[in-house]
Length: 173
Image 1 (cartoon, rainbow, N blue to C red):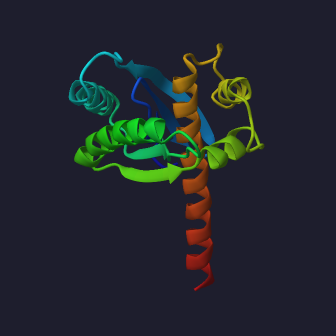
Image 2: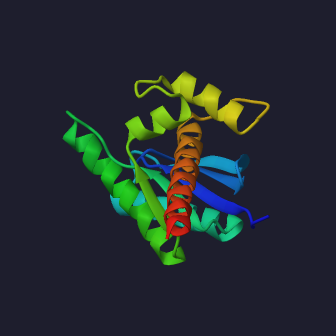
């Protein structure tokens, strides 16, 4: 049996960046830890981004993930919110790049379809399904952490599909 893979999931946000670590062994997925890095709205932007960078760096140092599933930015109307989320996402990605993790980026639609089977799933539906998939005895809170676990699960599923396609192609040669 192959070694387990540890995947970090990130749901970026300037006020709240959710994170979650899952272990994947074959088709089995389990939750190791999750949390949320919160920053104060009144703090200067550089300090808030450093908090996100330091927080994600600490998670990587503690759990040693080798791969990342991160939610890509999708905002249709609120440019200010999109910029703030983009900055938070950048701070997290710099921490990840420093650790050399393999990165997978997924739209909110992809994550929802992977977790719930429906691209317009509610936060509650995502939390419920993340709890079921990871066999947790509670709903992961806050919702930012549940979304991060969802991004990690999404990455695990996409990487398994890519690996299967690669193996099939190799066997056909």
